[in-house]
Length: 246
Image (cartoon, rainbow, N blue to C red; front, side, top):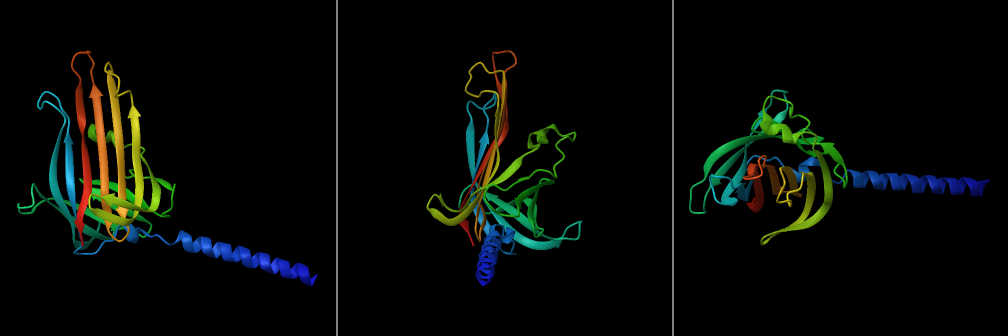
């Protein structure tokens, strides 16, 4: 009997220890680890903007800028939550002065990271932060509104991938990053020269631990060739690559 009780006690101890270890690992990453919101914090990016060729320009063109995202102030949003104002500055080359050109709002709700851009609210991060966890990142966006330009945001599944992996960005090595696969969908066949229509949607973000967003690539492209003579592409592409931060 004593032996049975002893074995049972060992089993309980092992189970308790395993649960404790699992809980500790489960709580190692928080929203603030990958999206620190501190007034005065900044990240500078190389911004490459893709413009599609139609009858205005002869070929697809990439225009490059530098942009700086600066956390400038803490505010209270319309739901009474603490939020932060992030101002974006832009310049064409290093010798140019920074010019403010947009303002975003970011909120750490304690279990998610909301980012408001051009009146669109994105759920950029969501807890628990672990590989393969998925959520509807665009669920706050009314994709059935009267604005046809946002319908492609409908029903995106954001999924964590490659947690705690290094990432090389030019000469910068980010030791620990988190990848968020946001969209990778193609309707139609872009490789078919006789294609009448196709749509490409791709979006991915990488967050550096203790830094924030370090890389983002986005592409939305729609191609139509209804009469078989001249196709027309709409949409845009953006790539953000971190080049500096504090």
